[in-house]
Image 1 (cartoon, rainbow, N blue to C red):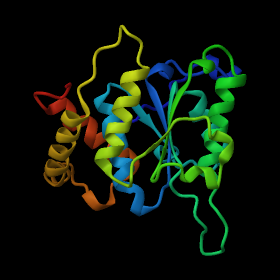
Image 2 (image 1 turned 90 degrees about the vertical axis):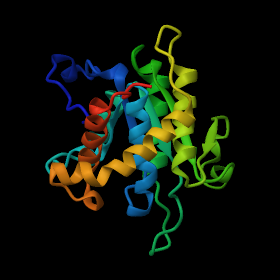
Image 3 (image 1 turned 180 degrees about the horizontal axis):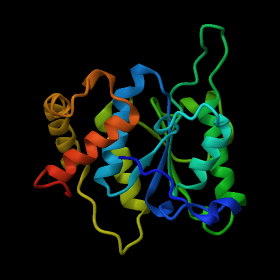
Amino acid sequence: MPPQPRPDHRHAHGRASPDYAQNVFINCPFDLSYRPIRDALVFAIFQCGLRPRCALESTNSGQVRIEKIIGLIRDCRWGIHDLSRTELNENSLPRFNMPLELGLFLGATRFGNPEQRLKTCLVLDREPYRFHQYVSDIAGQDIVSHGADSARAIQAVRDWLAASFPFEARRLAGSGAIIARYNAFLQDLPRSCELAERDPKNLTFTDHAEMVSDWMAAGPDSSL
């Protein structure tokens, strides 16, 4: 399951948590139609030996949302930012949450302490070059298109991490192998949920992360 921040005196001074190097911040849409992509991202992150973190992992009504986001960004060495939901809503207004959080993440890499400047991010969209129309200032970033396809999203995460890990890190399995494992996980999910007394159609972010983590721990080939 996504790790909860450990009590640590460094937080009082704006320092990252002890899990910083293993944490991946997921900045993505929360709508139901995006859930297949989000779930695939979570699986790929776990499969690559890291831990997914997201604002959905806690629902503290007493915490200001932007402070929660800032805390998550501070505590994550890695970041995945999906900008595929910027279209107008029913009030003809765009949604800028994802670009805002990407901006905070990029700001940390530029103006943060040496630990924060180690951050690396993957920027996703559903179509190539679409971002030029709504956030042209990031034109220098390498934007990867997933085409609203879970397999392509997994490949994007795997290839990004394979290129970003230090040389001493363990070698990652190919995207084809990880996608095959994800399909096996999806086939097993109804039974796993039945054993856990959970509804597979109503899993929270934390529920899903726990199901992925438990499934990998139970499988004979959980680490490809």
